Length: 461
Ligand code: ADQ
Image 1 (cartoon, helix red, strand yellow):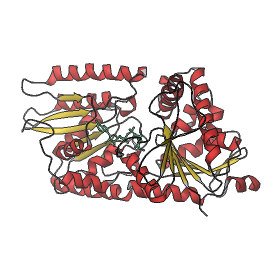
Image 2 (cartoon, helix red, strand yellow):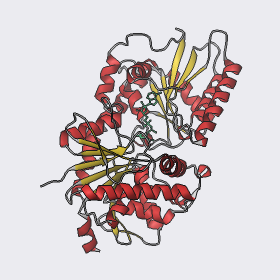
Image 3 (tube, protein in one colour):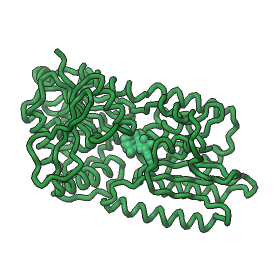
Image 4 (tube, helix red, strand yellow):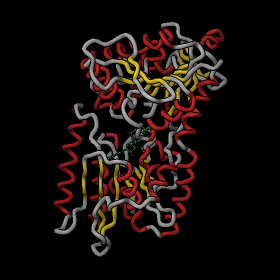
């Protein structure tokens, strides 16, 4: 009899209907298959409990949370996950915040979650672990003798071997991944970096069936490019908005940027690219306004406070230099907006600027394409640093570090003939359709079910 599906992710929806693409997709998958969804509790505990707390709800599956104290949140979540692993995986080893207590806190929280899981997991269950918050989980479960299949999907880039060596715990980092049965990554480039890193490791071995062996552990690594619920996006886009979501002068074109406020998203570089475009622009050509909508993120991490200040100064400077009485070139809005507002904005925009320096996939690129009017679509300018660039080759692909390249692409996007816009959009829409998020989830779960059980692997070696 097949076991149940257990999903572990940092956040789970505890109140009201789930929102956001990934959360909705996981909710639907669990509703269809049944199972258990576990995530961190939203309130801090004084003393962490050694059992999961069930979350009441009407769903066709169970939900539970694990506790975190305020200190654990500081060390495990803000510290090791977001001030060490996040910069490491986004090629920013200069931002690594090396504090021994961060690594200790990270290991301790993962060990506790593993102990709690070991109490409830059956040998036929499949455990699907999401993201960099839980890298040690499979290793901890194996230490406790758990033989269930455990898969990891890493939403962010897999780091290069040279970056991994900047980590004090680099040996553990290799062991963490190797203890999973299946490691899902976003792109083929991520898979290549992962294989390359294990090939260079003194104990790493490539097996003939393509799996990777490190000491006694064998794991499979594969790409599962994530997507969006494209149909919902296209449907919202077809419904006329109740009110004009943004008042832009009739003679100004809209260029749109939508990103969490994060240094990996390359927003300052984007502003400089736009500034280069403005500097070269023909004064008789229509004005273009860059609307950058950015929900704040991880505000208590220092690197995130610095980027906010940098962007405020940069947008002020560019507006001072190029603005006119009736035109503000950059509108920088630091807030989250509902999907019903975001989608009409995507559709109104002549150019979508998606220029991260490094990004696992980048769902905004796919959302922008899905929201366009196929008869008169806007143009996607996409960084080669986004995982999405591996599939979305009909976008205008740019080097996000090169302001002139970005400036040229803005110019090209604003002046692209209708026929070319339509044909590029049709090709991009095909990619969006082929990477639907529900199929993505089913593919991962089925692939996890198909891997050999860990106990069988050990006998083989
Ligand atoms: P993120 O780094 O959060 O995700 P992304 O994939 O672009 O990046 O997803 C952001 C989501 O937030 C999108 O659905 C977008 O619509 C929404 N959003 C952005 N700005 C918003 C705003 N102002 N208001 C409301 N919503 C907003 C991580 C990885 C990515 C990977 C995803 C999924 O970093 O590379 O694509 O996980 O695997």
